Length: 150
Length: 161
Image (cartoon, rainbow over all chains, first blue to last red):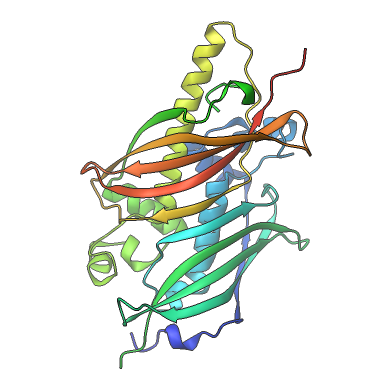
């Protein structure tokens, strides 16, 4: 685990770029078929006729795409120990087929667990934008990360 | 929700959403696509990870709630429609708060989900719509609460006469 980044390697205020993901109609329908088969997540015309304004990804799909960016861009390069929750998710604007998403994490606060000294706790702000810079989703979440071996 | 207009939904309304079964294959398939952290991908990675074994991505647990919700919602709408009722347009959700992954979900677990209405209000910005607040939970086959969140969904108001 020597090459991994640990709790001490990240500072409050630090912003981590998570890279990009191009959203396809195919993956929107695939996720929706399995987990959220509502018309506006399955059909372009139904999406356009709805409040979402187009074929839009399920909110849970957006969180899952976000998770993928997070895993590839940060957690799998670090000694992540998972998470116990998400205080808030705001689906600010629909994520539509054809958009290119980019994500970032800002470290809001950090502390070492009082019960488990081998574990650090980050409060993070996650933001997801499209190619035009419009913010699509904002999430606050907890990330646990291993403290460097003493 | 459940084919009801805002005015027809009362605080305390509780819906059993049925259950979702997590297989080893479905846990790994979801993780490969959306959450490829070692403890969601293999038994070996799970045993070295923080959850004591291969466990489902928390977003898989959330997606399972959504799947159960849509199934029950669609069935409720179909029943009302068959009885000749006018159905409200289905609204999207603006987000949620206080999502908690309280315990890991392991291969072979079956999580039973529920949703309870905790409040509602009209929306000043969208006169045809209101918002319904709910407390949502997932309980595994041992009766342990593994998942919860406070949901919000836009809900159509009864058309004014």
